[in-house]
Length: 318
Image (cartoon, rainbow, N blue to C red; front, top):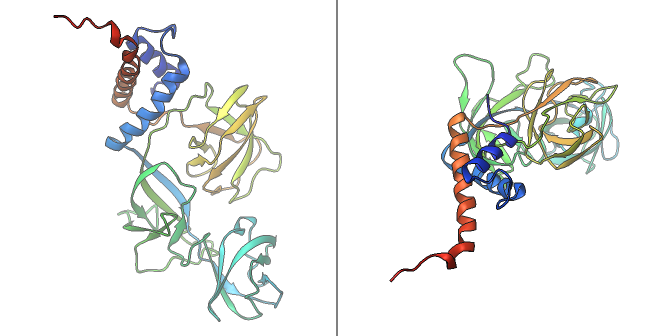
């Protein structure tokens, strides 16, 4: 079983023979731990697989409404469409979705749609249905490849291209993705990355969804309860939800107060969640071998940082 953050810190203190923190405080050791996690990842990275949504819905406007897209035929819009891009392929114009009105109407940043004109919906800042916005997927060192469609054998492994300042990843394939409004469409991609390692300092890694009505597909924020009494959920922490596919990355620090916190995360929920669904934070991405390397690396750095205090005590001899 992987060592917890506290257990690894205790191991480092034991190597330093400073279990009372007389010379090295716990915050000082923690700073060295964070630095060592990044250094180790340059040689043995954490292999992550992200389950991310493809976007490629299409349709035709059924009404002419200023700065809006209306489609009562398909009624395929969701609240998670805010921020996505609309391409009017009838007159080759673009707009961003600024608000969700209903399943049949979206508010747009520009007045580009008229009745009977065709449109396609793409992910945020994307310009085709083979692209995914990954600007909130941080900490990766390298993106190796993608799998689309998923859950097939042999696997459909694809090369990828990074575009737009590494904000967009494009899957290298000649086929077009399915219209994601179709029930049987292949709607998700596995994106394989090499990431920095994580070591979560929380003393209790479990929590629960806290909202009676639950959260819909595409949600990027949730209130959690049943957490430890206080502390911080840090940007970059990873978690899973028992009833939901995929792994999620916390986008910003969240303070735990009275066993509860509001977390923002990436990607948006791939499945809906309900009240009391169990949430589990990833405690460590280190293997047992890497734990030993990290402990000795941190102890060595601590010793080096303290050695200069005694530089004038060295007997020069002669």
